Image (cartoon, rainbow, N blue to C red; front, side, top):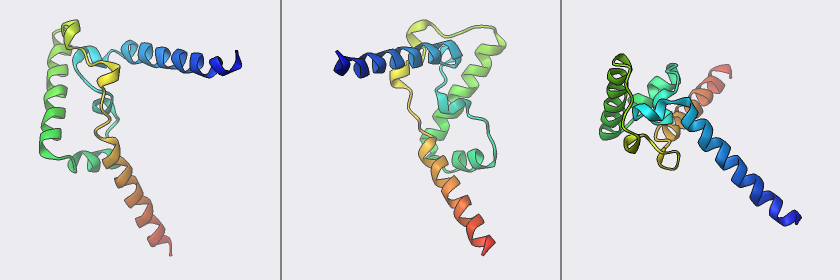
Length: 110
């Protein structure tokens, strides 16, 4: 019985994450999680480093979301971003920017 508990807990956690993802509402506007990250200096630099097609896709999603929001509308349900399809496209770039910033700060302290 104890061997089934971690699997059940994993399913429960997955179900909760999926529920929370949908409850946030950004997916109903066609956004992915990384589109909603607060743009501090690290994030702005990570966005600047995005490949052009990825950056253009991001800007399309954000503009469409702003347009829908101003019209008080959401996308048809079949166009909502699904939890399983949400790609964290910005995270690798952001991790690199943060690593570089910390390294630079370390060098400046010496």
